[in-house]
Image 1 (cartoon, chains in turn blue, purple):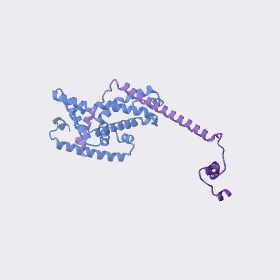
Image 2 (image 1 turned 135 degrees about the horizontal axis):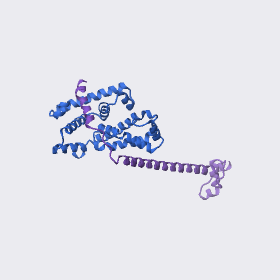
Image 3 (image 1 turned 60 degrees about the horizontal axis):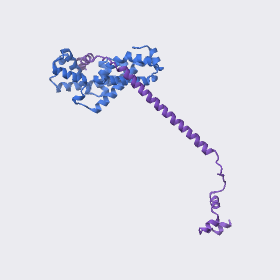
Image 4 (image 1 turned 60 degrees about the vertical axis):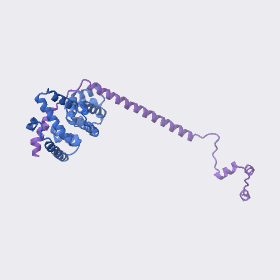
Length: 200
Length: 109
């Protein structure tokens, strides 16, 4: 826990300063999780604001401060899921809609300004995002929480409110779908970046 | 699942490194509080309007109950039947003026 239980109690009682301190403590972690869940850096702050807005107006529904973190994660997952659903509906692929980071990456590659480390990271990011784009929003979020954020099955159980076996089944199926997308992407693009290929 | 452990899992671990936690912008907290205040004032406005509507409905109910239950002068409660009241309001003379003649058997009753 990044904050004391007492502080959560104070925020629940309507103390704005206490709420402010909670946001300050968690915002960086939440921003990071959202960045990896949605894969679009330019929208991360908007989604994070939605998470904390939902937190503010539903804090009184929290039964005990002990479940605060899984609950905050659930709000994060829900807001990210809503965002991804809206994005999928738009189904955009124009250059104007590419994420800032992708545009910067493209510009830097074109200008030959990127060092190899940045380039490698950019390629990993692109490859993983392409794989995650190939599965449903539900699978994307579940896999990111488990494989990227490193949450345990126990933690996921609390967030999703389902038992461990059901989670294992969902994870297994999601992994199968990603593996399929991974193989398809390798078959489709045999000339994948050399460094990334070596890494994996 | 070997392929997962050997190839995809390390890729996810690298992805974690390649997307670090971003620093919040300077406007993060001010815009969050602006959004909270906007929603708070919207909610309180809705609550105020709802309260006004409820109060108006309660006043209208009380007024209607009062209007129905208070006896109005000039209206006499009658125990006569509908036909008696109708006959009384249309005397035979005025009916005769219209060319309507009552059945004598009916008149004899």
